[in-house]
Amino acid sequence: MEHLISLKYLSAEEIRDLVDSAFRLKQDPGGYGKFLTGKTVGLLFEKPSLRTKTAFCVGTHQLGARPVYFGPEEIKLGEREQVRDVAKTVGKFVQAVVLRTYAHQTVLEFAKHAGIPVINGLSDRFHPSQALADLMTIQEAKGSLEKLKVAYLGDGNNVCHSLMYAIALLGGHLAIATPKEFLPQREILEETRNFFRLSGGKLEIGGEPGIIVRDADVVYTDVWISMGKERERKKRLKAFRGFQVNSGLMRRAKQDSIVMHCLPAHRGEEISDDVIDGTHSVVFTQAENRLYAAKAIMVKLLGGLQ
Ligand code: CP
Ligand code: NVA
Image 1 (spheres, rainbow, N blue to C red):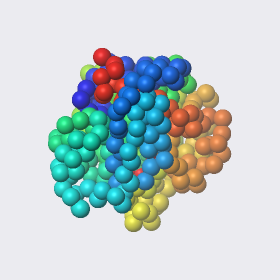
Image 2 (image 1 turned 90 degrees about the vertical axis):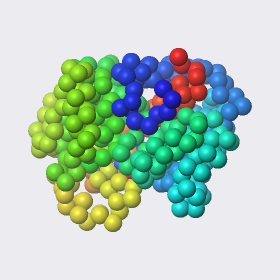
Image 3 (image 1 turned 180 degrees about the vertical axis):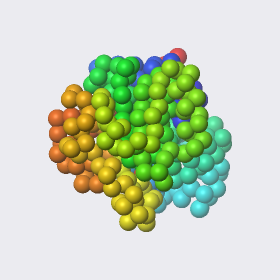
Image 4 (image 1 turned 120 degrees about the horizontal axis):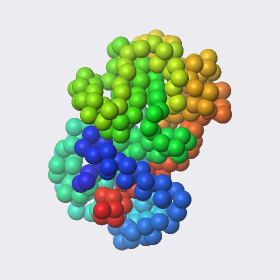
C-alpha cells in the first residue's frame, strides 16, 4: 500500500488490518509510540474541514510528528501553480500528505508526482479515510459487518462511493436509496457490483427510502448539498425530499439499529434533530473514530504495519 486514494485499490485483508490497527490505537492511544518522530505530514485542503483536519493533525502529534496545514486560500492547486509542481515541491519537505480536493483527478495527479504517500482526505469521488472509520464504528457497535444490512440514504457521491467499496470488499449487505439524478457513478456501480459478487456480499439500489431501511442494522446518511454544490441548493432540496432520516423512517429499521452520518450534518435536511441526538445515533463516536483510523493509515503508509 503506497497511497490511500480509494479503497478500491486495497484488498479485504488490508482493510481488515487497518480497521484492527485503528481499534488497537483506540484501546491503547500510546500504541506505536512516537513512531513518526522527526517526520512532518502535510495537509493541503481546497475545502473546509473539521474532522479530517483534526484527526490527521492530532494523530500526527500523537505519533510524534508535526503537521503542516495549508487551507483553501494558500496553495491554489492548479491555479497559482500546476498540481505536479506543487506535488514535486511538497514531496521534498514532508514525508506524507493528506489532500482534500474538488477534482479526484487532482489527487491522482498529485500522487503521480509527489514521491511520498498521498492520503485522499476527500475528493469529489471518494472519502476512504472516512469509510475506514465507518467500518470501525459499525464493528464497534455491532460486533462485525457480517450478516448486517447497511442502508444508505442520500447523495450517491464521495462518501457513498467509499462505503460501497468498503462493504463490497468485505462481503456485507448494502442497500442504497438516492433520487435517480443522484445515483452513484455508473462505473463505480459496475465495479462494486463485481466486487459484491466476488465477496458474496449483496448490493440493492434504487428503492424507496422506507423500503431500503426495512430491517436495516445501520442507517447512514450524508449531506444533500456537498461542498461545492451550494448553487444547486434549491434543486437538491426538492430532489431529496422524502429522503430524510427521521424517527418515522427509523421505525422501519431494526429496533437496535444504529444511525451514522459522516458529518457535517445539515440538521432538519438529511437528518432530524431527534435522530442525530437520539439513542440510535453513533454519529459522534463515528467522528471520534476518524482519529484512530487516521493514525492507522499514517502508521501503515509510513512503514509501521507490515
Ligand atoms: N466527515 C468529514 O470529512 O468531516 P470534515 O469535512 O469536517 O473533515
Ligand atoms: N459529501 C460531503 C462529505 C463531507 C465530509 C461533501 O462532499 O461535502
